[in-house]
Length: 287
Image 1 (cartoon, one colour):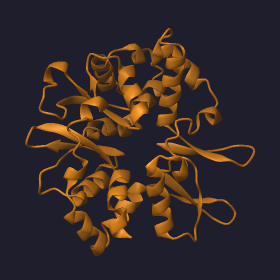
Image 2 (cartoon, helix red, strand yellow):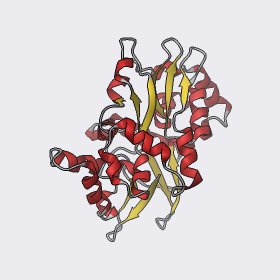
Image 3 (cartoon, rainbow, N blue to C red):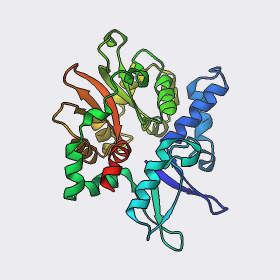
């Protein structure tokens, strides 16, 4: 879902779908919506990748030597989450490089979860922490979109909230219980389908029509992308019996960037959780 872009001056940067989305939304805002999203996307896909790489600030390229400790790598990721000037740029993945600058591995938060579940100490700690810490039922509606809204509204929310997914719900189902009764989900990776299919025009549709188009896409994107669509809407309960260990295991099994939390109490989605969220929540107890 990302690549490393190398510049002639020796700099490197990550490039992913968040950058495509950010530039798309920026063009629409500058035009004050005077041009349709389809035309804005035409401009984006014509840009050199070097002009797009990490324009969203989603993840800076901050390499660390192969001799660096795991503690230092995890601290780099967690401290950047503070989002202030002292913390520096946002870091979601860390390139591990050789003395010659060759990238040996890119350490992600999923790597942390994989390691944590392999050892008794971290596993017990994750088992002891409740998933309810990520219950945001009072605010999750702000990170959701109505099915009748333009699909660009979902893209704007993901850009503003630094999310890779956005639940889609029906207006008549948005009551006072909190949480979201989601009918489907829009993902930033949907932009890959838009680009591969050369159907920039679908960005001018509302959410419901866009999802219908996405579900009908066949053949040209291969079995892998179809499988990803089938598994995109993953929900994990936030009952008292569920733990961060359950979240970590589900994230690893699904290989998704984020999964949804649901509450059996109100039968709604109440949170969106990433592997990075779990790292930050549990790091002080792990180290």
